[in-house]
Image 1: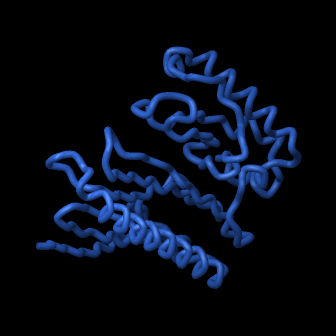
Image 2 (image 1 turned 30 degrees about the vertical axis):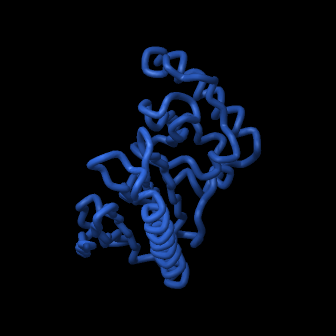
Length: 230
């Protein structure tokens, strides 16, 4: 017998802030069966100066999450007999607003999937959006030339040295890679470069983050993105 519960919750503005401009709302799709549990937050934006770009971003987010749910349902069905006694397959998707000012938005999707075994897997998928130009930003878009990678690596190494206790359990020396064209966000006047679980350390260590001061990076940044330095 399959028990299904679906609920939708609308919450205005993830951070609870009250200002004119870009707003973020979220729907929560939640249901449960005999062998699986799903709770997926689906965010959407309003207030972009480019309505077509706004529709495109919202459609992409909703479509990606729906695809994740469909893929999870299929995998959960296939693995329902392999899950540990008393457990269910689990999909959880949450979003966190990191920065929303000066026509620039950083939000981070965090997705947890468990379909059997010792533990599940967790991944972060950020979106860094330039509202002014109507495009999603990669790390390289923020800087004037390719030399920025050496600067970021130097700052990360200095951070590791200065905070040796915090970073003592890293397996390898952190280094900017191609994945970091998307694995970053803006928060509290920092450019936060992060590594996924297992990239630098054991799974329970979680995400390894390196918050780099935007003020120190201003001389390397394109003039149009210095507006995010506060």
